[in-house]
Image (tube, rainbow, N blue to C red; front, side, top):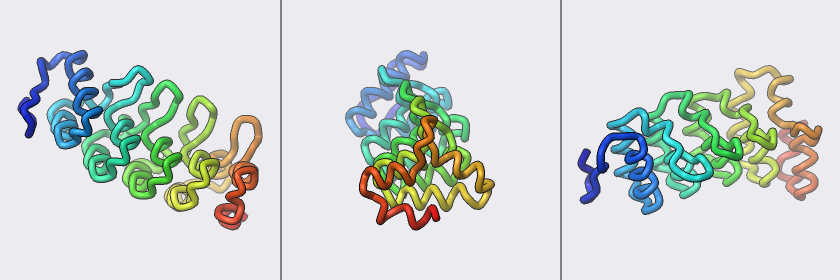
Length: 183
C-alpha cells in the first residue's frame, strides 16, 4: 500500500503492520495511519506499543481530534473497547484529558463505553470527574444517562473502594464544577 508520503507498509504480516503503525503514529503521520486502517481491518485491533495501545489510543493521546474522528468512523464498535495494559480504552484517555470532541466521537458510536472500567475500576465518566474535566464529564453524563437506568449510571460514578465522583470532586476542589449536576 502506498501512502501519501514515501512510506509503504513493508509487507502485510501483522508484525510489519504493527511496526509501521507505530512508526507513522509516533511521527504524527495520521493521514497514513487512516490509510492503513482503511486498507486493513486487522490494523484496528493491533496493539502497537509496549503498554498495549492501538493507533487510536495514540491519536487520542496526541490530541488529534480530526484524525480520531476519522479512525472512529472506520473501526467496529468492538474495536473501541480495546483496552491497554492499564485497562484504558481510547474513551478513558479522552475523558481524562477532558477533550469533549473526542469523547463525543467515541461515546456516541457506543454509549456503553462510558461504563467500561479500567484496571483501577474507573470508568471514563469517573476519570473525567476525578481529573476535574467538567465539560467532558457533562458530555459523557448526557450521552449515557438517556439510555441507562439511574442505578447503572451511578455505578459508573463509583470506584471499587466506594469513593464516588462527588468524593473525588470535593477532594480535588472541583466541587463547584460538578456536584450540582449530580444532585
